[in-house]
Image (cartoon, rainbow, N blue to C red):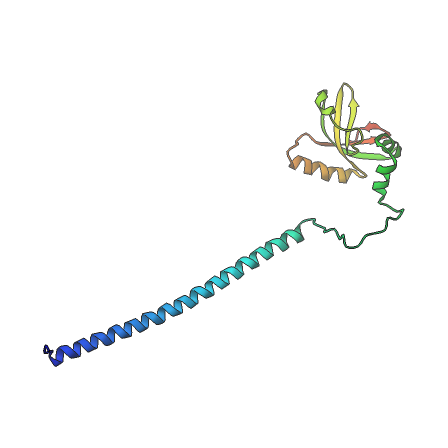
Length: 179
């Protein structure tokens, strides 16, 4: 058997102890890191679930979404929304006769003799065609007050139709609002 000096043997034992201590330290460090990574994964999944929930709830609350409850059938009563009853009882020409004697404000968006604009239904109540001299004047909306029409005109202008102005009609005749 070979002979090892005591001093060298002591150094060898010290190196073995240092390696054992380092191994224990790195094993413990590895275990704690694994736990931290597991916690981070749990928190990340929870965060994404919470984010998705917030987005869905935000969409539901900020939109005009009204779910239809089909579990309860409503018996059909004779009463209906007056706007619906007008459309059910009258065609487009009769609606114009209902508005006789009432001043209606509208937002005119164009006036020209281009016939391609005539491709709309006459029963489309909120889009109007009125002859002004040799031109066809096209207007959108039916408002009870000039202020309501002005607000709508401003929104139309914001959408990019720069030549929009408020006009008024009474008994189907155009009325000059401002000189």
